[in-house]
Length: 95
Image (cartoon, rainbow, N blue to C red; front, top):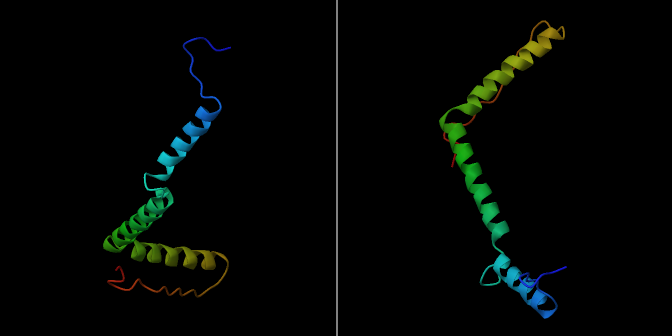
């Protein structure tokens, strides 16, 4: 039960309120920009991560570790002569 102080939207008021909420959710121009902003933010974040990885030679370190792991794995599996060649990241490959 509702008391005198309680206010709930009913009928046309409820429809008007939901339309108002939808208007604000989609933006003042009727454009729903949240997905576009999220995509843009993800792209920019990925660029920063790639740049940091190149600047700090993280890709080279990952290559070196991968080479060691594969060599040890194959040696442990019984292979006598194991040579693993990795491809180094291209210097200045970050754009």
